[in-house]
Length: 269
Image (cartoon, rainbow, N blue to C red):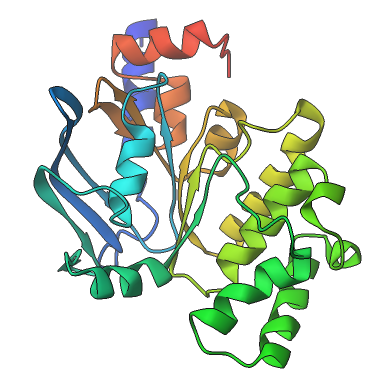
């Protein structure tokens, strides 16, 4: 078997491995999704599915449509074509119904967006109190459990200004989890962090993945995508260049542009 044949065989083996959750109905389905900003085509006929318990990482150059797709997922952006289905049902258009859908999807942004005048505990407890109608005592008890989960129980009474960037982002993750979402959406959650605190956030996300949380992660952290993702999607110019398991994308990409993109990042596996 020559080198070219061996490479093809390795790629075929990676693709043939069963995809996580493939034996169940998908949680999210994107059908020919299009998004325009004026004359700019941000998403061009994007079709994907996300399975239950799967970690899907979206990678690609900046401005390629990854974050836009994430914002379309929970109707923060309206579509210009196609549709997004959650558990087989298209996303609603009425605002009251959209709010209910957003409760089922936790979203963590690049910026932490914590309330500066509230403690870490109160930031996490606020959603269950104001949205879910939970009692303050129950919400604060849940918040403490979640702060423990992200390694911040000792910082419960700290205000955001007294927390590092990594700690603030972990509070933001706990806040999203407090709503008991079915899906977690992460929009480059480590891009605003200094290198010393990136790892603590990625470790929390890895733990969520190990617990079976369905996750869509827009990231430039290739090591995280390679080690934690079940499925990787490569974007460019609002379209999908390639998708597959990490072993395919990082070890045997089938598209030359994927190889170029990873090469520019200095990726060597």
